Image (tube, rainbow, N blue to C red; front, side):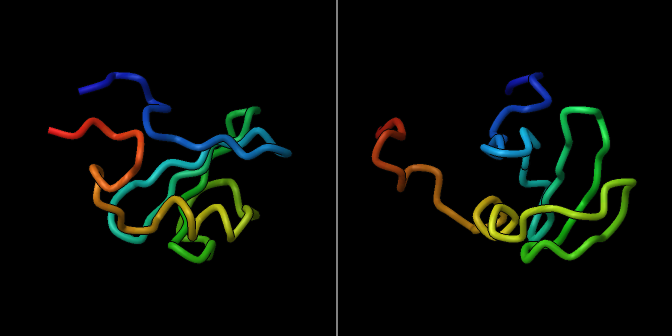
Amino acid sequence: MSTDPNHGAIRHGFSGAMYTRDGDNRVKVVMPNGLTGFFDGIGQWIEGELYDVDPQMCVWVSANRIMVSHRISKQD
């Protein structure tokens, strides 16, 4: 298991924010300046000091995917 806090995160191309899945239908977003917020799977604010995020990134990150379904995933 990785100890990297950004393990599995996706960086937003314009804002530089890191989007990480944080449980079912929950996304953690950390801005480069350290502001952090938690949002649901469609980008609605749950908690934190960050209130505005890209809702499409929240949809993408929160989607329930099978880990081995990706074409570059290790296949056993």
